[in-house]
Length: 92
Length: 208
Image (cartoon, rainbow over all chains, first blue to last red):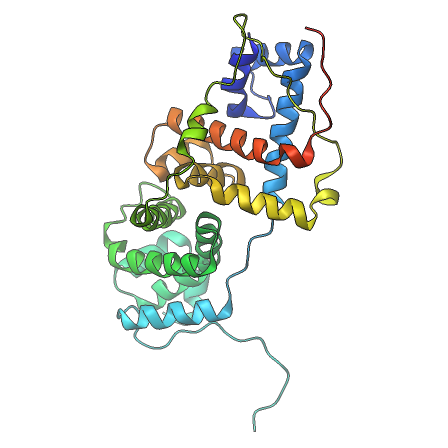
């Protein structure tokens, strides 16, 4: 197996756990090739870095606007809203 | 059926009730999936306003097309497909394709006749990712993923951010498994290259 082959197939299985013949060949190649080991390590870290960027939570206002839009399309017979968190204040 | 009973319904029963016109069941489906749909739409659109438009369009489509959902795929797969198509439609209206060529080039990095890389592969620092995710790097990450053409960003997001299998990804996007693998390979390589200036140690030539 050559570096170019590793490049083409390494993405299928970044952790190389599969027992296929190709995976075994990749593992053997990685033992002797520093460049491919470095490439694999940087690819794994790339994925981890992108995963570590947090995604925004659904804003309450966006939920409310969705409900209004769906109501306008006749999806709900009555206003549907998410229950608000209890604040502990009594109604007067 | 009461509101309390609705929230306990299994997904299959819920979908069947919603398809039968039960508005409370549809409302419960919205409640269960709105967070997932919004986050996925944001990851694809990279913009709050566009994400919200996609999010709204998705649930309008779900309402209109629920009758055609045949249950052969998982409901979440069907939802992801709708979000993906809405995102692609939005993009096609804008027609941004500046860096498609540079991704094509990543398909075959330079190798010598014996198949070895002709350039040394940069070594990245081994600092744990959570310690180095400073503001500058985070900005770079956001920029890089924003540069990825949607066809690649979708596959990268589904496989590496949402944890979908190659098979489910190919089903959601409507491409072959081989095409999904190829797009993932190019997307990862592109994103890696974008971060290399921030992550790599100074190159050291190695004897071959």
